[in-house]
Length: 216
Image (tube, rainbow, N blue to C red; front, top):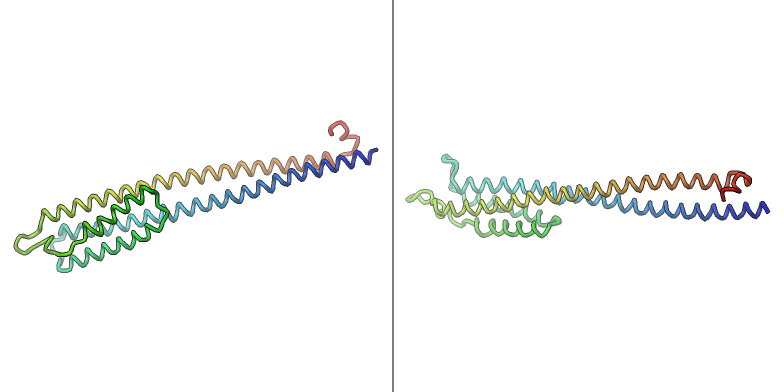
């Protein structure tokens, strides 16, 4: 009789232990998925937000150089190759934009970047220095103002792109925090399961039959 009771207890113990082990395995799978999500989130923060903010800074520097050349800010500067220098800065901007476009863009980003690219390729594509300056009339202030207005629009696009990096970066960091908190909860759940597993094994396998009779 006691052997039969002990056998049933062992079977129950094995079933309960099996269920607990299955829960631990399921938790482990969820934990792996959570860590992959956290890793992907921080990779996205770096590649699509921090690196992109660097792109925006570089573009802004090139745009500043273009405006200086268009406005003839340096009186002592040799402007004989100004068109080539403007084109060089524009090519640098377009090369950075190409890298920018390869990142994970939001719909808003794509819109601002397309508008900015159009300004660089079309509105600031200066073919002749005569549009900026002539020996007879000096600086063509009306045309320079048109270019300055286009540069101001381009800067607004850059400012909006920079704001998006901050907003999207904050969203990704919040997502990472949620995943980390969830991971901590699963870790506590695992500890609880392990404690239950130890208690079950003790009660059903190691305590004497007489002691367990009132519990099972």
